[in-house]
Amino acid sequence: MKIRAITIGQKIPYLSENVIIESSLEQSLKKFYNFNADLVNRFRQIGIDVQTKRLCSQPILSYDQQVFDQNLNKSLITIHDQLSIVENLITKYEIDYFSSCAVLADFQITKYGIYESLFLNEVPQFIKRKEKFFTSLHVASNDNGINLSALKSGAKIIKKLSEPDPFNNLRFCVSSNVQPDTPFFPAAYHLSEKPSFSLALEMADEVVAIIDESHSIEETQVKLKAKFEEIYDTLVPICENVSQKYDIPFHGIDMSPAPYPTIERSIGTAIENLNFEYFGAPGALIAVALIKNAIPIKEKTIGFSGFMPSVLEDFTIAKRLSEDHFNLDTLLLYATMCGTGLDCVPLPGDISLKELFYILLDICTISLRLKKPLTARLMPIPGKNAGDDVKFDFEYFAPSKIISIRRLQDDTKNDLFKSKIKSFKFL
Image (cartoon, rainbow, N blue to C red; front, top):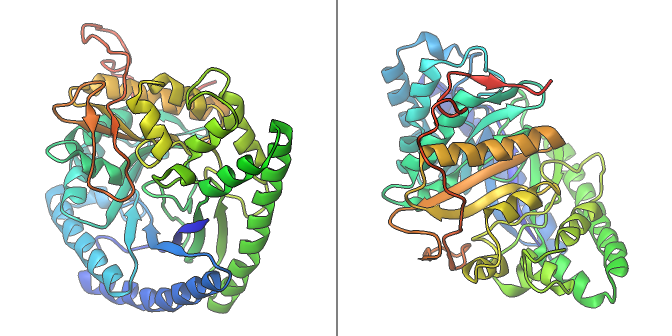
């Protein structure tokens, strides 16, 4: 097991004077540097490594700042400059990545218009011009419904990010029902005035080990629940202690057992070791539910805290996709068991905006009907079709193939994609 990320939330005063951003953020980052060093050392003393240290902030487009009252072109230039300032400062203080949600579109459904659409058109450039910047578009929640206009913008962002380098979509997702201070990127964002922190874990190997030593599915369930409880009870006191020392509130732990692309650290391996023939096989849904059900529901359990089938990040899942053992519908089915949604899914390069829109709509629908957080991090690969090989030169990705999807025609005139309906909320 490793700590995937220590994620600190801190507001950044975007569109203030540059000197204000630099001075306020540098002051905070000095404190965060010492905090991170202390926490990393505490974990190291008990044999747990920390992979990354991260920073997340409030949405860039915020009505509290009245961004809409300013000249859009001037605002976009300023934001580009200020994202560079943030990137330079986090590098100085040894923070690996930062995330600023683009806009909470679900909250702004009644205000969402041309300004927001034009702002979101620039999001691909924010990502392409920065190496350490992640962002998300929060489009739906049970409180406010689905912002269909923003969903269309999300599809456009995914399509633009795919060309010429589809790897850029690693740093963007569309999210639904994701709460502030969820530590996994790209979905992380922060709203409160006071800084706070949370943990993301990488512990698919713990699930594999428990399953390998168990002799039945009943024994697996008991032992897995005990292991997750043990991990929670080990990490929380350490975090609370360091939290009090630095006066940075501890928000909690996302207990999702995130994978790494080797056989022994794969959640797909865990599923198969429960004696299902392959990941995606009939009946394997119970294994997904078993893993989710073992995660403790406690005060400091936050975020997704569920099954995490990150396709390209998981060796066995990526391999089974290359063998054509599952498709997009399989992943949507598994998302109903409280997973993270559709993560790092390689799609045909010619996927249309309409097809992307409806895939995103499916995720939002599941999220709202089941009242759970879900995201979609989709990766169209230019020039590739379903079944074609895909391989990135990236430590955290395994080789695989383009996933098969059900294709759509573009001749429907009165569907939701072409309609002028801006939002939808279940009664």
